[in-house]
Image (tube, rainbow, N blue to C red):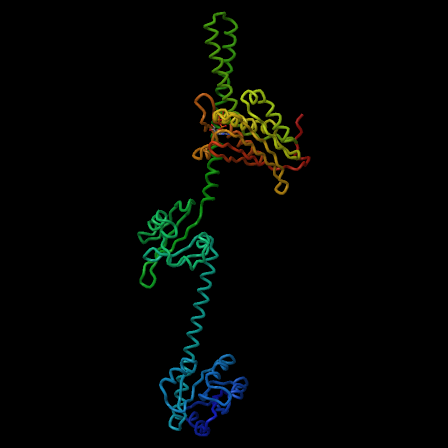
Length: 489
Ligand SMILES: Nc1ncnc2c1ncn2[C@@H]1O[C@H](COP(=O)(O)OP(=O)(O)OP(=O)(O)O)[C@@H](O)[C@H]1O
Ligand SMILES: [Mg+2]
């Protein structure tokens, strides 16, 4: 469609002269003239308008209102036509959206094509600039979306160690918007000590990655220095590796336990035979002598050897590699039978047993092994109660069936002396004991842990010093499928 230059002006204008001037200038556009805004708008809608010259005041609206309306329909360059020159009006017109201004008199008409060329050039530049800005703002939005999508903490600090940018993962831990972190110093955000650790990593201006403990968690912290607008910045990426570390330790521990188990079972088997020999011969000799002194000595040998035998039995249970042979059992019944075994001692030490049994479906467990778990926990509870000197000791056995998660939960709580925080992470370690030399072997809980793990369950402890301890066992509830049940005859 032929290009049009539109004149919207209700003052006399020399149409033929203007048409000739544009032709002479080499502009092939057709010139259309109208004297009011409404029809001007209609023309813009219908024609391929290249530019508009508009009077300052039209009968139906002023020139600026017209400019605004045109912008919404078809943004084309608009030049304002004044009756006379006025600097203030010109700058006001530019501010309000006109690309240039001309004066309505014959001499100026000759300048119109040049003004138009300049306005179009300016207009194209304007479009290019806004497109570029658009691209920048889009890429800024993308950058923010990407950085906020990453769940590691990412932030940039400036050369004064103040936050320059931060991602959402980081601002979330402070319950803030990323923008609210800008300008906060590293010490203000993480505390002095942590800030020092972070600054040290990025200090010497080379990219570095180190493992650090910050805000009580373990992080892999990477610092990448860079320059921006002649200033030094450092971008930090902090990856929380606490969980990974925990799994690594767990794996290492089970590896350590497995190899320790192998070693122990070898030694225990070796010692078993000589001990059996010592016991047999000491008993034989005891029968043959009447001398009290010798009998006394032999009894001491027997006591010592029996204790060794007991320790070896424990070691063998601990190192046993065999899988449990499970039968359908009532957990409540097994607990009852275990308590029964200790009834004499419980009475003797005035320890009350409280039972809070819920209905538990029969499940697949190895009854001997499970009894050993309960026994070891009960023995520890008794000991903790006796050592604490409480007037009325009590051990609570609570069983719960969590059918949403298919779990059987057993809580065993005592009101003994509790476990100090600094040793609580060690109590399941083999040979860890606080009992005097010659009494505990430190194997009770590691045996319990091994058995429950083999059953696919888990065992946890919660304890408060001087208040008591609770062991929590979670056993998976195994549905009664025939092929799961190994019938023991
Ligand atoms: N109920 C409890 N109250 C307070 N401390 C406990 C309790 N249960 C365990 N402990 C602590 O955990 C340690 C380890 O327990 P574990 O049963 O493994 O070994 P032990 O009782 O010392 O020796 P063993 O059971 O081989 O005779 C105990 O020495 C004790 O310090
Ligand atoms: Mg024990």
